[in-house]
Length: 226
Image 1: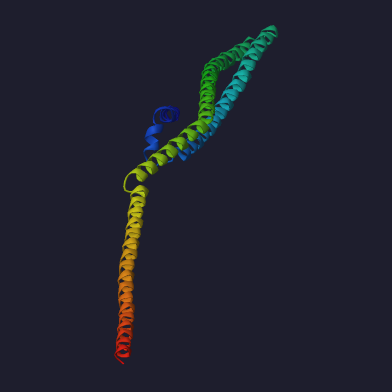
Image 2: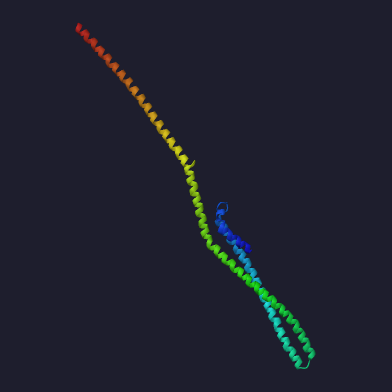
C-alpha cells in the first residue's frame, strides 16, 4: 500500500511528459490517483482503528489481571492472619499464575501500543502526501493544458506553412489569377471583333457615298451635254 504512494509520487514528479505523449489524459489520471489514495487512506484508517481497539482490549485485560494479582496478595495475608496457612498457600499459587498472565499481557500490550503508534505515523505520512499531491494537482493540470495548447498551435502553424491551409490558399490565388487572365483575353478578343465590324460597316457606308457621287457626276455630264 505504501509502495503505491511512492509510485504515485514518482509518476507525478517525473513522468508527466510521458503521460502527455500518450493517450492518457493527465488531468483525469491525476484525479484517479487521488481517488485511489483516498481509498487507501480510508483502508489504513480502518486498520489503525482496529489496532487501537485491540490495544485498548489488551490494556483492559492487563489491568484486570494486575488487579487480581494485587488482590490475591492481600487475601493471602489475611489467610495467614486468620491462621489458615493452607488457604494462604492456594491463594499465593493463584497469584503466581495470575502474575504470569499479567506479565504476558503487559508484553502483548506494549507491542500492540508500539504497533499502533507506527500505524498512526504511517497514516499521518499518507495524509501529508495526499495533501501535497492534491495541492500539486491543479498546477499539473494547468501545465498539461498549456502543453496541449502549445502543441495544437504548433500543429496549426505547421499545417499553414505546408500543404494545409497555406497550400489551399495559394491554389485559390492561382485560380483567381487564371480567371482574371481569361477575362482579360476574352475582353481583348471582343474588342478585336468589334473593330473589324466597325471597319466593315464604314466600308459599306463609303461605298454608298461613292455610288451617289458617281450618279451625281453622270447626271451633271448629261446636263452639260444638253
